[in-house]
Length: 155
Image 1 (cartoon, rainbow, N blue to C red):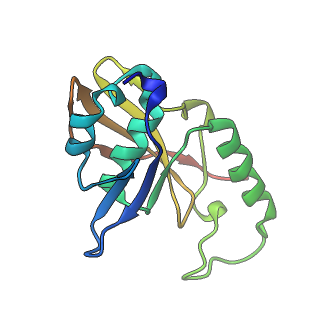
Image 2 (image 1 turned 90 degrees about the vertical axis):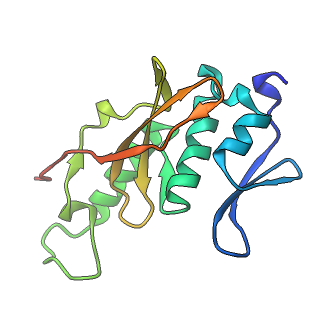
């Protein structure tokens, strides 16, 4: 199967609440299972697809892979601009300006750096970005590590 011929993938949870991915008509319960049937995911051309699979099994729906860094930057800046800069911090009502602004030039689309898949993901609740990396070669992909990006004060 060529990389462009990947079947559609739907990210979901099983009846027991564990992450699954529906690949075509097959329900898959681990990234290892997907890689056994679709080793072409571990290619430069499929870095985004692989990042979404790895991210889903690692963080379920809590994080979203940033595939379009420019669109993410626009949305982040728009949200900050819409927030009241003079409002006081309120527990339970986080705002991006309470956290800061990342270096958007560092956020790249999913890619391989040698045998390491690197991608950026946003926390779906807060919207702040994380850098994720995971060893990926052949039909083996490890467990990703997530590092919060440094955020600068918004002035």
